[in-house]
Image 1: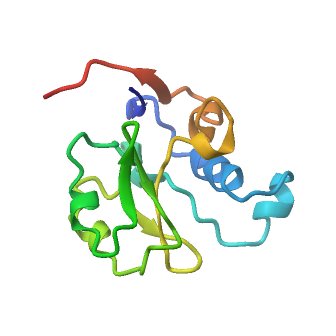
Image 2: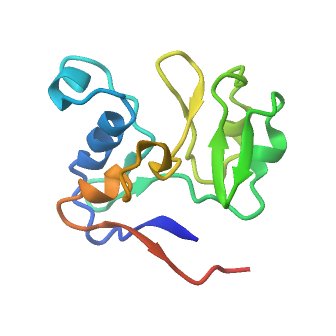
Length: 146
């Protein structure tokens, strides 16, 4: 399965992946209208220090602890992609507590959100990948570890 991978050596910490992600998931056709003067809620986040930065997003685990721990049954694994049914999410933050990668965060309504590989946006490529100026984020198939 194709996934988003990050090469932290190439990450500039510019946060463009966050803006492209927030725009792609805004449902609006104009980036300025979607994001200007508003808090953004990306499904990918830049972490790090002045020396190194890296993007954090869902790893779409084979045996996802977030899915097992969701008390509302809002998280599921479909075709290898971990998805959130935002109508079922109660915002209890259990998934945030158990995710070893820090990939989940609440949206503006307190409902959990995470990277779903832009599959619902019909982009073909996740917006974070397409918007990374240094190609530090890639969307590719790699051999899965056990």
